[in-house]
Structure formats: C-alpha cells, structure tokens
Length: 156
Image (cartoon, rainbow, N blue to C red):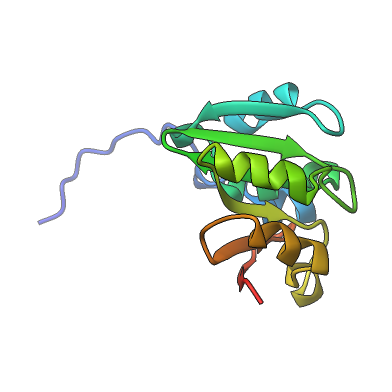
C-alpha cells in the first residue's frame, strides 16, 4: 500500500545534483567549484603556490576540477595524513628531479597530477613526468585531465 500522506519537496530534482565541483561540469557548463575546492584555490592563488592539507580534504577529482576552472596543472604528493599540493601553469608544475628527490626523502609519494584539456592525449605522461616518477620509490602515478578522466602511468 502506498502512503497517501504527501511530503513537500524541499528541493526540486534539478537542484539536488547540480554538478557543483564535478570536473566535467565545471569545464563544459561553467558550473562553479564546490566550497572545498574554492578554499583550496584561494590557498593556491598563483603559479608555484604550495599548501599542505589533511589527506581527507582533497582528492585528485578536486584537482581535476581546479584544472578545469583555471587551465593550470596541479600536482599532489601524499605523506601519511598530509597532502602537499603545488600549482603549476598551463603546461607544467615547477618541480625538477632534485626537488622530487627531496620530497621522496621526506617520505612523500607522488599521488598524481593534472593536465589541462580533454581526451586521451592529455592523459599521456611526458618525459618529464617519467623522470619525476623515477625519483620516488613507488612505480605508478596518475594523470587526470580537465574532465576528470585519468590514466595510470608507470616507470619506464
């Protein structure tokens, strides 16, 4: 039997799933970032900005949304309960092999980074990406594009 008591709809169905913070929605429809992403972007306001945040407060999909919004690359490194995020520009993150070796020596893992754009070609690791990964003990990392798609790459 169906309950005949009607409850008012608090939010229309269109408002429940706005796409807010979804990388593809940010890129395709200009949907705004979610509050967590906005706070993160405020801390990473310019090229070569760095911030350490709690591991639970950011993931690669968030960085993909930031890339969709800004057109810039972002790199994510994880150590225990912390994540280090570095903002790049449209073509790179300012990190060389010496800096990567220092991060690895401090116990960081390279969780991943973003490449602006769409499609498969944006997900291909560059020679520089492979050189940076060689500095870390682990064998794989990921690249996300502006749509939230990703590809895992490994040491050569």
